[in-house]
Image (cartoon, rainbow, N blue to C red; front, side, top):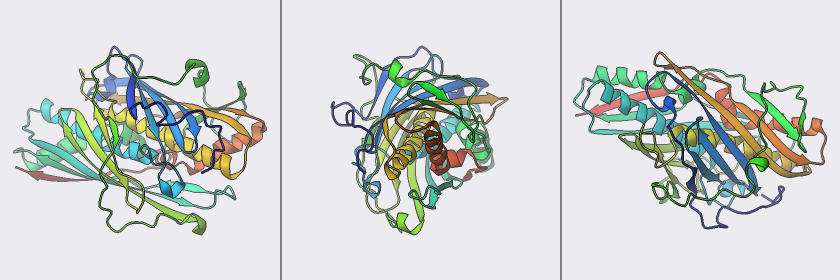
Amino acid sequence: MSDSIHRTDSIDGHGYPLCFKTHAGQLRPGVLKIQDAQDVFITQARAMGGHQKEAVVTEGQLGSSWRMVSDEGPALKGTDLAPFPLGYMSAGLQADLLQRIGQLTLAQGLELRGLSCSLENDYKFEGSFFKGNGVGHAYAPRFQVRVVSSAPVEQVQRLVRQAVAGSPLLASWATPLRNTFALYANGRRAILRDLAPSSVSVDDPFKTWSQAPTPLAQGHMLTDIVAKAQAVEVKNPTPPSGWETGRVDIPIHGHCDSDHGMGRSMTWANRMGGSAFTIQSDDRHSGDQAPSALAHAYAGIAFCFMTQLLRYVEHHHMKVRALRLVQLSPCRIESGTAQAQPLDTHVFVHTEESDEVMERLVQMSARTCYLHAALGAALIPEVSVVTSD
């Protein structure tokens, strides 16, 4: 991909880790627990040039902030230096489900000696970027959860169902949402005619960040929170091309191990080319050594949407000098059941194009973003449980 957006810096330009803490919070979000709570995760993202993107995710009003980066593999002519957007969602889905199972196991006094899962998460693109009629699709995530416990199988299965019902992330997949948007062109908010408008305004990330995020000078964090992994054996791979035929299948595979709220996920696209990445998460109430699983997932949505924006800017030769966004991801749990909440996305551009062209950009990107497609459909997760003693 050519640099349709002016390159500001690069993922490997400063030698920073792929993920680090930028702000130490006072309190972890309540929605990480199995209790009634309400929080908003805020993601600020920007295009760095090419397919490289940077985001800072703040975990609720009093939580920490984490910087993450994303890239694409060779199939989209990326540099493959950081996880692809759908990989962040894969890691978030797995780790969030497992940590909730772990909490419920502890709360119900059940023995637990091992907890892991695998995930197959498929997406599809149809249409043409060049013609502007492309559409992204998502399919229900398919989990296989493995539990090592002496507890009765029926009790474990009931507990897993409770964990699924209590996940704000899985609720947003299972419930069709009418997500909202806002567009700011050259510092001025534009009127949206064909998209559901946001009811709030947010600050431009360029005003929030006078310079690129840097790691905290001190802080007890995991090393290699996000890192490239050893190559994964790809079974029955989907061809890496297909854009010219008007249909591309994108199978995302992963697996995750969880230990007392600490998750370690591996994720890869089940096709030749491109790397596997490990993504670690920390969902402990008193821990804060890595982003929560929800933070990884919400970063993935912002990265996926940003990818679509960048691709349309390139394909249609739009005169856009800078591209950034703010995404508000609300979470709510009531009576042990998560309540799906619409996503609110604010796009900021410096451009020579008209408001109508920029609205068309946002509209096309929302239509082709695989994760916005997931949140706009009723995709009830398929979960099988394997138990052993």
